[in-house]
Image (cartoon, rainbow, N blue to C red; front, side):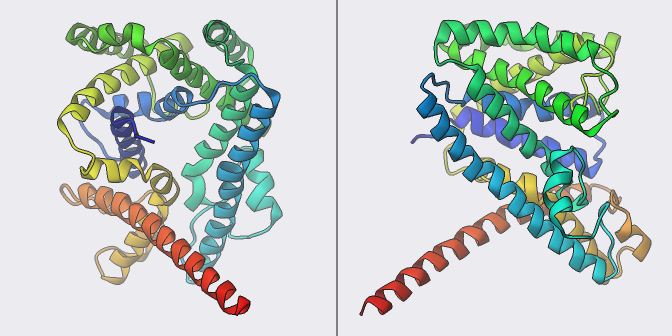
Length: 357
């Protein structure tokens, strides 16, 4: 199956924004823009590629596939990151809210919206995305007209619900519910865009649309304000402004990515990173921590700094080193896993062949 290079570049931009945000990088003029779209973009892309089916059997097959490929790996990785956290704690490096590995910290805490392992904190999005996909699977009917209506009507309904809900941080269940609803908001936009892309693509890709979108975004940010926490657990004080600004930023990124896709080949390093988005999402914080520990043992930073969960070595432009280490290290972990899996399969086959003899 041929990959969509435009969306590959969008994935690269999105995951880069998340890594830079977690590193606390200050880029003049781009700070608030980075936090405007980073989470909504991934929901949008997921909605764009979602399978809308009507058959209960088809829905069941897709659900089982998502449990196998998303939910089970999520908790397996939570267990692995819990073990790594425990080992680091025993070595004197305390990262996270818990260093205990049990059923509660590996499964139930995450389902309640808590993040017991700081090393795995960024992965909260993956669990929310799974539930958003499950909701979409049973909400969409597989009919273009009906699904268009559902996608459009869900926007005001979710925004109205958001107005009526209490503080998203009040309880764990409310926190997770808000995350899922906000996710479905942008997921629906992605599905809607996919359904009508051919009709609006010519208009969307025009320079006028690009400039107009940037102008409206700047206006919304200036008069309504868009804070960095807007898209983690809430839509901020002005949900409509936040919602419109995020979608316009996604539109700008789509136009920009289409242009880059036209002048790059599939062998570009950009596509290596975009195809490793899941790995980067899961592992970039772990790589960051390990890199800080290496800096500590090299005598570059002190013990108090390495224990600071948000610490980066603030030498001029050194954030670029952190960024490259986080991105490349995470990709390296993915390829290492793929190699180990290939070797284990090969070894398993050899054992079976030997036993059959």
